[in-house]
Image: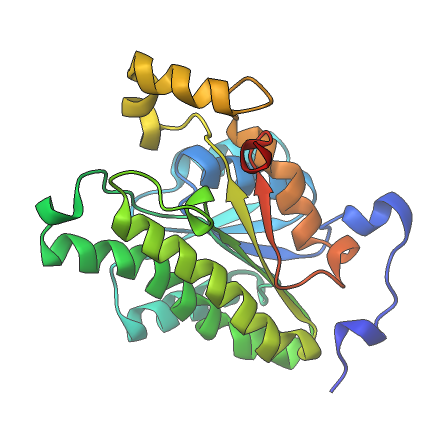
Length: 263
């Protein structure tokens, strides 16, 4: 089998180009997922949006910027066969998928004793099991091509426990472990598996925290950069980890957190 290490690799700035590649991205209708889909498109990739609801708004945005993208319906609460079918449909759109970005996620903020078993199981499935199943579904296609990128969106909770987010912390810690485990299985076949751990990024998912003056002040005092992040702050890392420039980087969880973990 010919793996990526045998391919001619661009040098210099061209190594960061995603021209000719296709990225399948979950959770692109808003927040981080939308920013990453648009950013990967700007870098040259065609995008397949894996969303439960319509992707029309982000498809139109990408088209206005000169990009090309398509929608495949996928409810991340789905089980094995539906995920396999979605992966096949994503590949069918452009004949290939080179990059999988597992971005969609769920957060439940309340004490674990107040959460039902169904809430816990649903969160663990969406945040941990579904990304693993998606990676498994796309892997045979990438292995056959001898190259691929899997990029998981982890969290600061991959390193820390947080407050009233036990299920989320469990899932994101698990996703960091999956990132390393899949590297051990696939790096020798030209597939890199990495994760970005965003810091406190201003999105709809944390509006309640940003509106709590006490908590917001507490966070800002802890962030050396002195501000909450913007979804755009993650685009550079995502392009790098999706490109030929990162072909020897695998099993890494890259924190993009304004220095939070260094404090």
